[in-house]
Length: 244
Image (cartoon, rainbow, N blue to C red):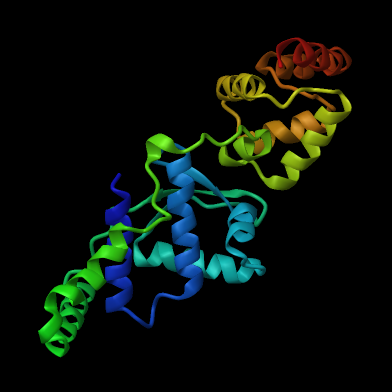
């Protein structure tokens, strides 16, 4: 997926439909692109409501959902599965949007550049440099080969999988009490078992919290079904201390 095309199409539409796009639309759409990027550009992915509201600074759920629904209506986001409430995730996909047919923003930029050129005929070279050079000499743009990798964060990794922050916080308290290590290896093990279980991450976290599990294995769900709850509750601590 071309991230530059996503942004370009969005701003083309915004410039041609100035009454439609508001700051909240911009914030939510930009965060959705960032979230999709961090997930490895998955075709469909969860967009946790609470996480988006926290990241964008939107305090009201009604304000958020109105802006989100607008983005769906405008065609920037495809809603695959609607969330049941404000504490669950919408399953979405980013659209290959191409409704901005007349490229009004391109025309405006060309017009603006032409006017500036005409007003500074005697210093054309300097004017062109003043427009172009700052864009490519931006000191905030770094060579990706020299960037220091970010330290692994267990909580953020769970949220990127679609987990609600309140469930993550509760589960991490249990893990802390049982002295479970929040390592990347432990996270990968959790993710593997989550995929085997074929359950939603929030559903699994609720089960872990209710049973005071500091870890998770799909086979423990079978133990619960057959009434061996006490054994299933004791085993996770031992397993996590050995594996994490």
